Image (cartoon, rainbow, N blue to C red; front, side, top):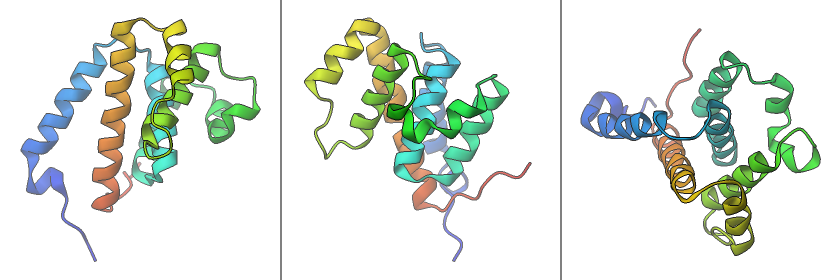
Length: 146
């Protein structure tokens, strides 16, 4: 059964989400950092639409495909920098809030790599992709065609 597409039924809601994206576009976060957040959160949530979209964006931005291939197993590689590891830990903990939320250890680790403003921007990036994941999953958003 085809589901309601919120971008068609309630375009104003999408405009509000795009306002968050506009804010994030001006943030201190690099394209690589934003893509790692978006892809990892989307993997955890099982959002095929967002995984596909953000992997394509990361590749176009010059990300090494091998890093994307192993992103789900990032803890078992040495392909990610210390600040990216902190970012991935935070992404996982804020995406899976019911487990422990943002742990004190991860919070302290993130603050070793990022200032208060960037920390806040990371939180907003994680919140935003989780919202997009929930929209796409609940509406069975179809994959984009090439």
